[in-house]
Picture (tube, rainbow, N blue to C red):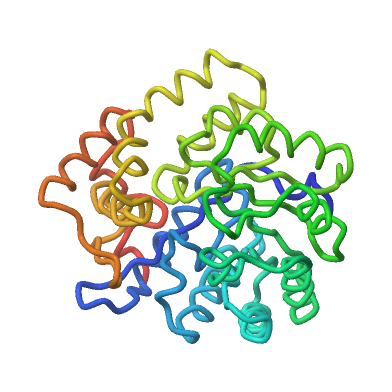
Length: 320
C-alpha cells in the first residue's frame, strides 16, 4: 500500500450506547451507514478515543469492527484501533481485529508510556509486534508532545522504516514539531502517508497532510471534507472561511476543562443532528452540565450544520 491509498477524511467514529450503558448496535449501524454515505469520507476508524474503545469489552471491540466491515462492504477501509499495554496484549487485540475483518490497524502508544515514557527501541518493537500478529498495514499514532509517549524524530523515522507501516497519525499538537518533522518524513519516506489528527490546529496542518484522521469528523464529516479539500487545493480564503465557521464548535468540543470531554460533547451534537438517540457515555467519562446540549446545538447552527433533520441514509430507526 502506498501513500495515495490513504487520503482524505477518516473519521474516528463514536460508539453509541443506550441509556443503561449497553452498546446500541442498531444505532451504531445506522450511524456508520450515514458516515460512509458522506462524500469524501475515505475510511472508518473504530474503537479509538472518540469511540471510547478502552471502555469496551474485548467482545464489544470485535463486534464493533465486524459491524463496520459489514457496513463498509469494501467501499472504504476499516481501521481498527489497537491499544493494549504489553506487546502480547496488543498482538491479541490485533488478531481479534483481523478475525473481525479489519483492513488496517491504528497502533496507539502503550498507555503506561503516557506517564513513564519508553525505552529506546520499544515503539519499534511494539509496532512490529502488531504487524507480525495481524499481517495488516499499520498506522502509527504520534501522541501529544506534552506526554511521555510522543516519539522524537529519529524514532518516527525508525517507525517509517518498519515493514507494514503505511502512515503516521500525527497528534503531536505542537506546530514547531509538525513543521520540522513532516518535511523530513516526506524526504526520507515519501511512501508514508501523513494524517493529521490535530483537531485544534486543522487549518495549519491540513495544508501538508495526505488526510485527516480526526475525532472531529465523527460529528461533522461533511465540514471536515470541505475544509480538507479547500486546504489541499491551496485555496486559503475558502479554507479560512470553513475554519472560521467552526470556531464556536471547536471551542465547545476541544477547549474544555479536559480534552476527553470532546467525546461527550460530540455525542450531544449527534443527538442534536438526529443521528443517535442517546448521548450516554461510559464511566469514568461524565455527562456535561445542563447547558451543554443547547450550547452544542447552537454551535452546530452557527456552523450551518442542520440539526434534527437527518432522516435519509443511515437514519436511526431505519434499519431492522
